[in-house]
Image (cartoon, rainbow, N blue to C red; front, side, top):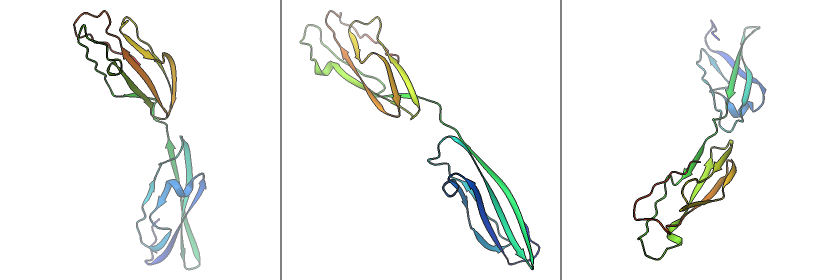
Length: 167
């Protein structure tokens, strides 16, 4: 809003719902004109949705009230669902003919999602020396889940077998 007379009091009001104070930030609610005001948004912690408010700028000049309204709309979307594993790889070593060190040939992946509901299928095929628990479907909703991985080298010839576990 531009006024022609200097040093007039300008006020700013915000109306609408929901979460007005939490996401729409105005640098000042009143002051003297002419003045630049900064209006910004903060979507932190807002659930996905469309948020709309109206800002009203008011100046009283003499006996006349001048107003200017501006619509502000913010659309918040959810991130696409994703899944991650920690660690990203597991390694096991065994010397042929030696005792099978149970604990050193077992490990775990920690599965996590970005907060959206995600279903993952855990399975191992074609590798009798590798087992995972649990198998089948796993639902993750922003939580962690553990997949135990065990290597059984019994009957394996000396080599460096590799297997990728699709999740």
